[in-house]
Length: 358
Image (cartoon, rainbow, N blue to C red; front, side, top):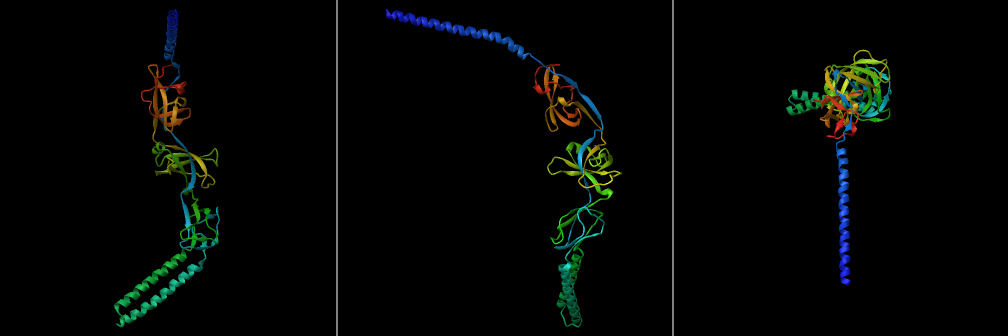
């Protein structure tokens, strides 16, 4: 009797397990059937976007850049020989003229060197004359005469060097200009060739601006291009300029190349090295570029950017090379070939291939 009850209980448990499994399977199938239409609707959804047409910029595009004023003539003045500075008659900011005495070293040491050289020259001349007379009387050999002549020549050269050093134991200005810096003062010891003063030229032809251009702008500018000059010290006033030089070497790893711009005619009432201003350069060559709104650009990196066009109802990513910023629009050098419109509103949320409507 017990065995029959046990078998009946086992059959009951098995029956209940089968019912539970069947219920789970039916629930899963019904749930899957209900979810399928929602997924289809989600895949078929298209994002609403706005398109703006590609326009053309045709004209002589200018180049705007900040610049610093400097003097093209700069003289670093020093003594030929070292010594203790005795006099330094001018200070920073003083105007100087060509040939003006600026500084001297204590002359005692150089004077002693000159006297020593001249005394040696006098002795060598006496020896040479004595040996020459003996050689004429065949009382001295040719070798003695030649040695005396050589010693006399060496003494003359030594005296010339000493006199030359005495002449350059003072500093005179080589140009008309202004003392930009004074590096050493009376009582200090100046080594040979060590700068004491820095003098810059202040004539009209000396002043110029130095500006750094990126490579694509540097390539467009040529010597002789016109320029407009603006100085922060003279707001609201423009001066005419001209490109005078282009550097052939990059500026210390900054990725820019220097151009130099001089005043063409009129100058401001007064100038000083280091004044900051702005340049607008006008390259002679005309450039034609397609342009798009700035808001169409996504993932900008330097002069590289990405935008989206629409093809067959889907977003199509395009890689762009930026040529120039034009306020609310941007000129594109490469990447818009065959494209007449780009996505503006909604571009930041797109991925390549997304369905769109406009």
